[in-house]
Image (tube, rainbow, N blue to C red):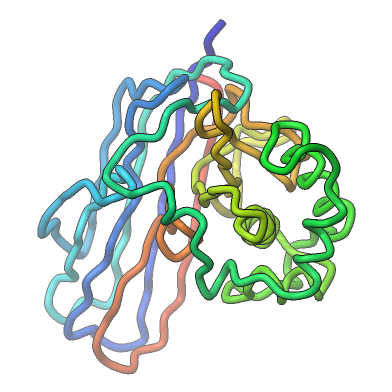
Length: 268
């Protein structure tokens, strides 16, 4: 049984003064994975140009984009059609050049403290097992309420856990931090989710993957309390949000920036 989704993701950057130079890293192009087949995809840049494309050590397709000289507005439009089949969140064996020990390394965004340690200890089952990982997801979901507009994008896992609320990015960082405390390899996934109640969305989605012996990488969406199904489109992975974010980069000048995101995910 398959499902085909149509996605359109448009991000606009407007500045109150011309920008002399900027370079962006885009992780906006999905690739074929277990349960996911890209039927068509395009990336359009208005106000900039593609400098290079490469596959990084996490097997993400990365596009480098520079701004046109002294531009004041840039728009990125990523869209396409993807067919998905049910895998119950199982991605399978590890691929790529990144060694498995890398996914046990803490980062500034996934550094755990006393609160994350307590959440880790509250999970039941054999550490690293499927049962334990689902239990950990439930423990985090119960302790950290999903609330929009009350968290900070740069919050670490421990900061979000202490606050007791956050969004999918925070839930994912906390889950990863707890896994790494227990020496379970885990990574951050960015992507899209078909919502049950609406087509238009405000932002991309995030979930985690943990490595289980005998199964490989398995996904866990703490915010929704499930493993990813055929509503989830996987775009990029990394040790944390900083490595899997749809758009990162740098720019010169002091111009103030206004960002506008329009995202549509619907059944084809």
